[in-house]
Image 1: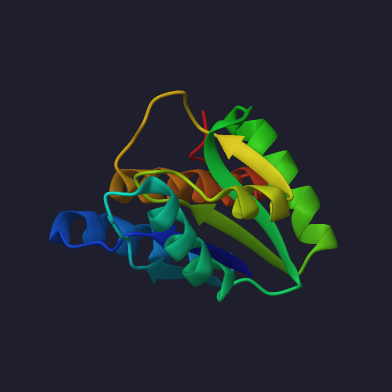
Image 2 (image 1 turned 180 degrees about the vertical axis):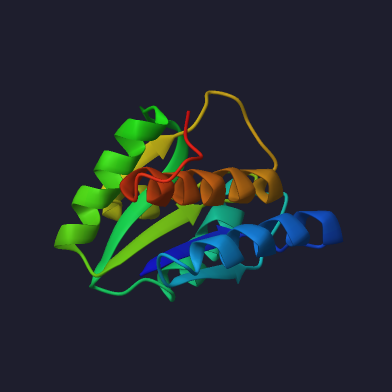
Length: 151
């Protein structure tokens, strides 16, 4: 099972349509769920990160292999990402991706992470990044099954 924990909620219909499309495509290959956590803005970064951390932690279990999505994480191409994901799915029942809010992730979440991955040094809106992550997971399953899609 793949779980994606996201800080922030999707409000725009066009983002949700893209997310729904990838969830539909992925349902052929794996069970996947998205957990949306409220984002906060207390005008105090530490207070905001602490509150978001408390909510994220409620959705993590001891069985989860945690991958945080961070600008400073390890970068990999799509085939390397597929190989990495496939290896972890052999060893772990639950693969949990965590996407932080506008201030990133609390240090505690980074510490409990098994792996930190970056798709770019650029900053993306969390709505768009959620779609990018879903697309790369979908691409991984297409590679795994030798299906045309990946080039």
